[in-house]
Image 1 (tube, rainbow, N blue to C red):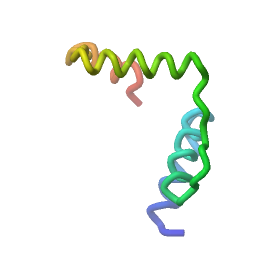
Image 2: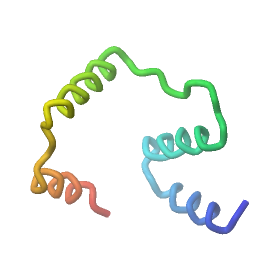
Image 3: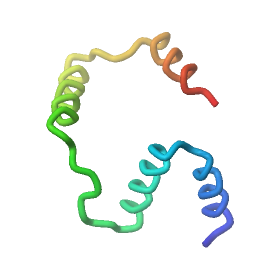
Image 4: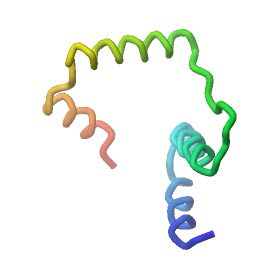
Length: 75
């Protein structure tokens, strides 16, 4: 394992279990895991379709809204 990967894993240990699972899913994808890792629920699929519709309409968050979200999750 490279030093950089060891640093990343050490930092990941400090994250919430949910964020650790998200990172694990990404890593498995990058490492060639071909099987589907996560199956969307019908509610999540509907949310994704709604988000795609918003994107198609150009309904994006304002800079102020984006800053508010980032400030809420700032370390």
